[in-house]
Each structure stands twice: as C-alpha cells, then as structure tokens.
Image (cartoon, rainbow, N blue to C red; front, side):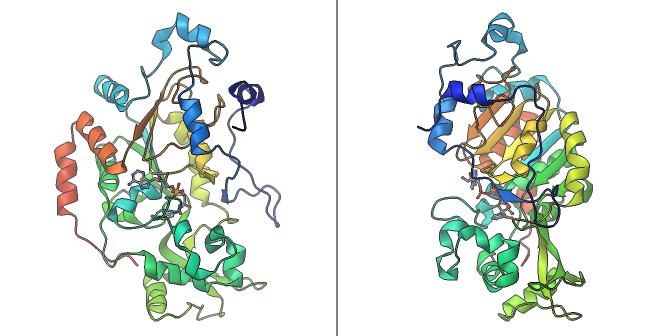
Length: 369
Ligand code: CNA
C-alpha cells in the first residue's frame, strides 16, 4: 500500500477552503478546463479507508468532539437506512443531484470505466495512442474520425431515460431539486423532462453542435443541429462546416476544453445552499466536476449511489468520508448497488414510489442519435 492514514492526515491542509481544480492551458494561465485526474486512490486503498478502525484516537481526527457530542453526527452510520431515517424525519428542500455515466448504463449507453463494458475497454479497433484521446480536443482536430464513428456504434436506435432520470424529474416537479449537475452528454435529462434552469450539463451536450475549425485554423462557430451530425455520420461522412470547411463538433466538452459558463456561475452558491447532496453513477475521476462534493457545507448529508466505491481520499476536506473518521460530522452514506435501485429506495422513503413507476412505465423510447 502506498500511503498511511497518518500521512494523509498530516498532508491535509485544514485551513484551506475547497478549490475548483485549475489546469494550465496553452492560451490562458488561469483557465479551468476538463481533465482526467490520475492522482486519486485505487479501489483497494479506498476500501481500507472505509474500513479503518475509527475508534482509534490516532485515526480519528475529531474523536474527542464526536465522543463528547455524538448528536453532532448527521447520520448514525454510512448505510442507506441512516439516510432513509433522516429523509423520514426531515424535509430537504434544496437537493443537488450530481450524476455520471452510471445513470445511463441501465438503458444501454456504456460508461467510460466499467471493466469490460466501458467505452475505455472497447476502443481497440480505433487504434488510439491512449483511450482518453477519443475525447481530447487536440487529438480530435488531428484525427476526428474515431470520435464520430464511436457515436454511430454507441447509441441504441431508440432510448428512454432511466428510473434515476425520472426520480430527478420528480424531485424537480415537487420543488425539491435545487440543481442537477450532470457529466452526461446523452441528453436523457432533457428527455426525462428535467427543466433547463435546473440542469447544468457540465460536460456539454450532444443536443447541438458548432464549427470548431481544423488543426491550426480556428472555426467560424456556426451552429448546427444534432440532425445534421446524425445524417453525416449515418452516411459515414465527417461533418464539415458549410461556411468555412471546419469540423462540426457536438457541443461536448473534451479534455482540455473549458466547462460551460453556467457551471461557474452557479456551483458556489448552489452548494452553499444545498441541504442534501445525492451523487449517482460516477467514478468521480474527472476534474473539476469531482471537486464539487467538497463545496457542500460540512453538515450537509451526502449520499453516493454507485456500484463501486468512489471519491474517498482520506483528507478531511476532500472527498467522501464513509468511515466517519476524517470529518467533523459524520454525514456520508454509501449505497453500493445500481442507481435505479437506489432511486427506488429514495422515492419510496419520500413517498412517491408509485408516481415514479408510472413515469417509467409511460415513457416512450425516442431516437437521440
Ligand atoms: P465513469 O468514469 O465511467 O464512471 C461510471 C461509474 O458508474 C463507475 O464507477 C461504474 O462502476 C458506475 N456504474 C455504471 N453503471 C452503474 C449502474 N447502473 N448503477 C450504479 N453504478 C454504475 O463515468 P463518469 O460519469 O464518472 O465520468 C465522467 C465522464 C463520462 C464524463 O465526461 C461524461 O461525458 C462521460 N460519459 C458520458 C456518457 C453519457 O452521457 N451517458 C457515457 C459515457 C461517458
């Protein structure tokens, strides 16, 4: 193992407020762009932190506080039952839902990192130098073909949103959703009826497209519809701009590109206001999105619903603390399972399970790409 718990604690800077990851870009020093984090812990290392003996005063930074004031803990342990208990006692009014590719796998769109089924495991035929190059803007401008042809393979002909998308839509209908921050580009949130003002498509969307030019020649930014792209790639053609001959790229944020302004305009205030954070179907490996969980106030309960551990760092101010060891208040819950089962449990404890099942049953499959 490459770390010790005391090293992690010694390492952590307790005074520093959470920060959105910054990455240097060749054009502007302070640009905040999308990048894949490679500094985080393996699943085994996360498991060790989750199973740490938190009665040992060496490990538990806030042990004295917690012994003297057990009532300060927001949840009694990291199980879903603790959150259900809380949901039954307290009405949350400003819920933020963060979502990743795991909310769409149930309806047939693969995620990035699931072993065997994820996109990264199935890029062999494209002969890329690295799997991440598929979504890298410099590589795209140099060789756009793999990106366009991946989409042709990727999307089922007709698709409907998952139960989790409809759960989020119902939170919106009931006035409980403060915002849905999604990393997904598949537009299933829109199809589920989550209103635009409550949705932040943090990594862009396949809904629209623009001319981005070609290598060493900036584009004219002319806007194109999804249908335009769809027609071209169905005919196995690369979509070029009819004005300037540049490449027409869906408005998806590639590694190295800036996130939408709406993300930066909203996240700080939203997370300060948030009274419950639900995180669904993400490995929390893409920055700066994964840093958002650190912006919830220290007594805001947070729940990860995912089929494997994610976002555990062992730092008091970074990531989840499912062992209740590193943070002042115990407030993190982990439901290890699939997103739709997690949504069902939440909907049931909030009293709208039947409405949810009705929405799922009545949804019509639609062609999105
Ligand atoms: P990821 O890194 O592939 O992680 C997905 C996580 O979800 C993994 O931990 C999986 O184990 C877990 N998971 C998969 N299916 C389920 C399920 N049914 N229930 C519970 N857990 C599940 O993907 P992230 O979203 O974390 O990474 C961010 C990338 C992925 C963004 O930039 C996206 O644009 C990109 N992406 C989006 C889509 C989409 O729009 N549907 C698809 C593939 C990739």
